[in-house]
Image 1 (cartoon, rainbow, N blue to C red):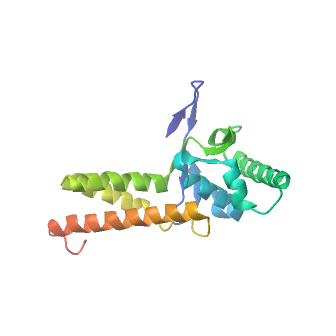
Image 2: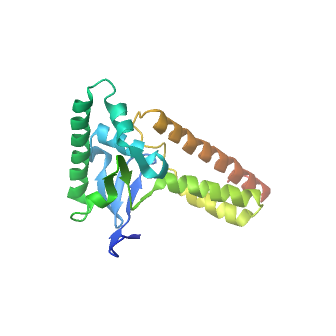
Image 3: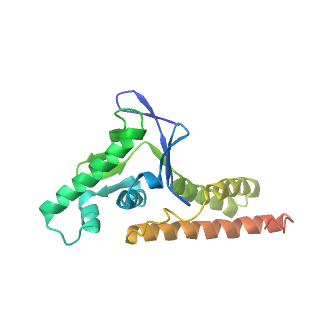
Length: 196
């Protein structure tokens, strides 16, 4: 639950829950709920989470939110959006740490030092399916039980998002379907038909 920074200092890893709702926890304590941020800020976070390595070019975000506005105006609006989100995070996270989790670097917006339930879900499903293919039934069933607890509903409900978010939602529901079929097969093979 801790992250080691380049200077050797340690900070808590924040937990971002996105399945079935939106919450941010720090040291296991709920610090931010969906109602605490604007729909645009939630969409910004959804786009970041749905992006590879939790990074997205600022130009992509600007184009997503303000496709028809003049570039100078877009930059001002984008800077304001990022500043307000950082300010909200700074109010609920340990002092001066918001910029360590929500960063701007080299034209990219990034999330760092965080654990995200949706990504844990996908990783868990992939591990479970690997065990399933190798016929390691006990290990597969244990992993599927863990990922079933993570699934609380669709990714970031209430956020329409663009193609990136919709593709990520599809990836999650496909993973849910694959793990469900595999787990049901394991349960049925072991004679546990009611559970299957």
